[in-house]
Length: 247
Ligand SMILES: [Zn+2]
Image 1 (cartoon, rainbow, N blue to C red):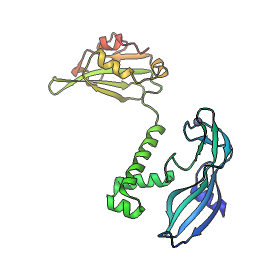
Image 2: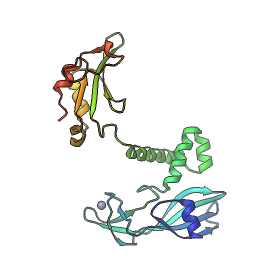
Image 3: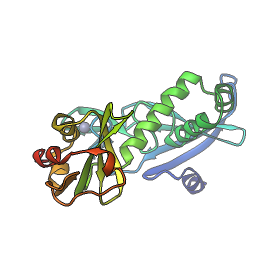
Image 4: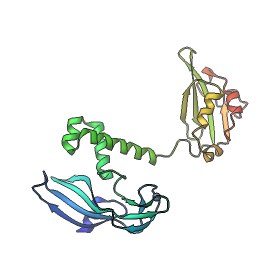
């Protein structure tokens, strides 16, 4: 039976130990309680996220709300292992099914965040039985998670182009940086000139800067000219592009 729950829950590095139904007058609805644990050797520090040696299971018992199973409320229950981290000392391990500090599983959070985009407050709270404020915290965590899992548009750049475009009849300028290889805009900022273009490089890591081999701009001095339909409207970005070495 545990292997069925393992497959149903489908969380990597999590082992189902036991499952039972708890129908107590102390709880508003019957709960399907699933006891789980992180797979051995896969323990990570909840503070730094690095893989660490297990210390003990002394972190206490915790519960995480999971997606309902039919009419049953589902909760994962685990004895929290602790790890010995050289940096943070003995701390609670990160669990593979939830974010640190969250009382919900990642699957529950994803469902909740999705529902919030297609349904109103009353529906989300009523359907999932969570307070709207809690749903807001959940959506925030899901957004952070998505952001962290998406590759940065500044990774692996080799050739970029900078265009200074004017709009509102030439009264307002916009500096736009494009990734020539992946054909997409990766950055934009109000204004023009070297100071504005320098802002593009500021958040880049050394590695990200180093990979950029070619910087093109309107005018050609910086290398091959980026001929785009907007060229006619762009100011000369050539001096900007050639003087701002990405190093
Ligand atoms: Zn750590």
